Image (cartoon, rainbow, N blue to C red; front, top):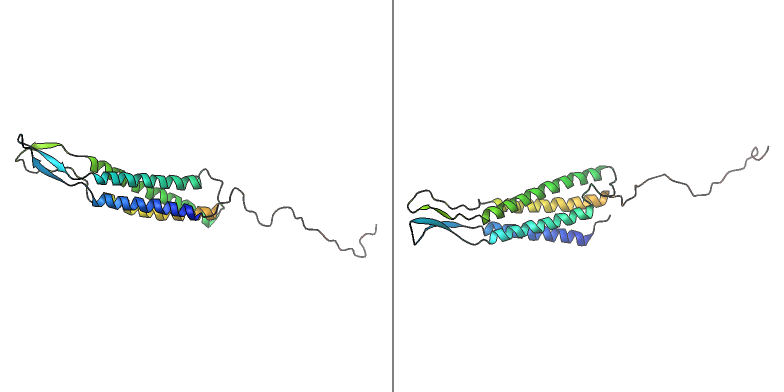
Length: 195
């Protein structure tokens, strides 16, 4: 299997768009403030936009599509045709594991950040009670997802390249083996041919 430039461009584009969405999710995290209710003595939380939840889920989906495409092309390393033994296949296996670890880390940060950002606290208590706080997402969760998205992009592209270099294409490569089809010339000497 040769390295396909359109596949590399698609993988790169999906990862970079997911990275942009993850950075946008970090910048647009929900903020909240405690506000007294105008009808009674209770307080409640007022939240700003939920855009980071949508951005985080979009980054999650794009990263998932990119990794599914990569594993469909390489047949997830376990269902493929086989790799040539040697340093290239060892590198491909290492990059396969590294791409999965970085992918799972990025996906967990993006999904957990989106879920936590979507959680909104309702009524918190009576007015005048100290230490009221509204539940918000901690700073840096989407940023960690964005960083792991870039690491996943690098690992995925390197894995695709290493896998394509170590792929046998379904045939094992043999050297100096097989049936020789060249003509064989025998020299006739003085003792040959006499019975």
